[in-house]
Length: 352
Image (cartoon, rainbow, N blue to C red; front, side, top):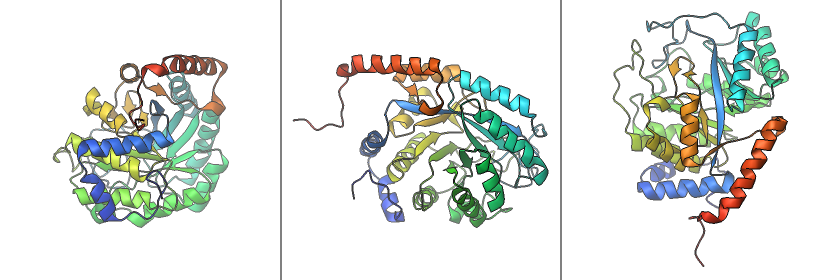
């Protein structure tokens, strides 16, 4: 088996060995794997909207939406469908190819499902991929979402099974795995990752990646979040995670899940351009952009596009939903890329 083939039999020892590689060796290996599966200069761009904020019954210690903590977050009812569609249209115009909708629920209520299903249909009609995170799903709920056309369902494992009870007590690790299984059975794609910097040890980060990589099918999207410390939550004073350790996590995720989009997610506002560039070098090829990521701030879209220009990165296009104008832009970019390709040296090629 080559280094770029998909595996589902990773051991903790193998993953730990990757983390212990010299930094440059790890990044080179991750970039080599990345180039075998993706265009190294394309990044998938998503926008995330909170369609129902606050008053969540779960006790996730990192989350300002939990009803267990006083974080000053204003509670909102389920957003009107027209507002959601307007936000999705604006996101598409700014270059997003996927629109993600999140609700602070333990699980969707029966009375809310018709609104949720209509949101999916209308956002899809704009030519965007759709993703939702609504908490735990039963089999019938997953089927309803899939039948409405939902492309992705986000349900993070958050951390290792060993550390999980230190962060959440109102639902079990197996509850999360069961939801992922229901999503797969319904035919949807999975968006599943975790949060780094919650006070966990390196072995917990290793354990999370092994759990994700050994799922029967790798998640199509793997969001890697840096904890955003929110005043009023139990984790507001946790020690910061070292920047190089976070970049190592991105690189190891890329090596262990070669064909997945690895998403540089929450916490990007605290990262400077150089750190983000190293994350892209390590194999991150998806971001959330916009002013808000659910309830925490996120770099503004214009800043992201400025960084993309500095790095020569292009937003990934969805060919099946591109408008004529988008197709013309993509063709122009491809022509320009081909015309200047000879100016760049591919460091992954062996010299003659």
